[in-house]
Figure 1 (cartoon, helix red, strand yellow):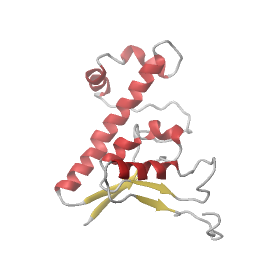
Figure 2 (cartoon, helix red, strand yellow):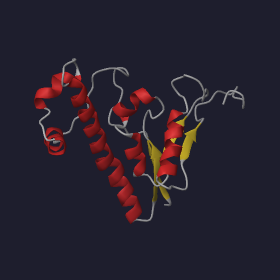
Figure 3 (cartoon, one colour):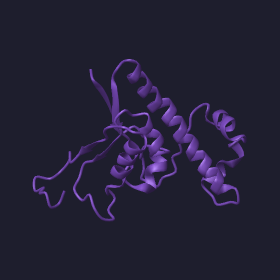
Figure 4 (cartoon, helix red, strand yellow):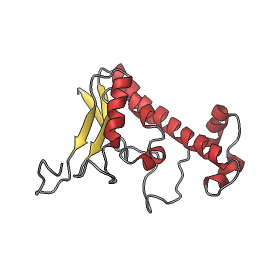
Length: 171
């Protein structure tokens, strides 16, 4: 086995819709949060749903911590195991294309890709340009990750669900 490909892991999975109120949580979430940020999140949870003076900073800390745990416990774990065993670690997360979902699904795209030997994204449909949901933003982040951290390659799982009428024009 030369490489491991992980396909669409995520800290958040859509169960109702993209804007439902599911929140990532682990049994040790509050404890690890307090250790990192120096305050307990228990009394702040309502600010995830409602506006308030401290809400903005807390929401940033909450989602930062969710991404941190995801990256440490999933990607760093797999990436470390792969390097110990001489296996290349690559793949992509779920919903890396639209900026508005990157925090909710990955926490921090750069931290996620940092643990991959070959950082990756997917782009399974047409319409790579323009202000459409599946734009090439994820690809730009992926190539930036490779440039910043001196990685020789990046990859894209591309065009897997195209129609039979696909042409070079609508790629």
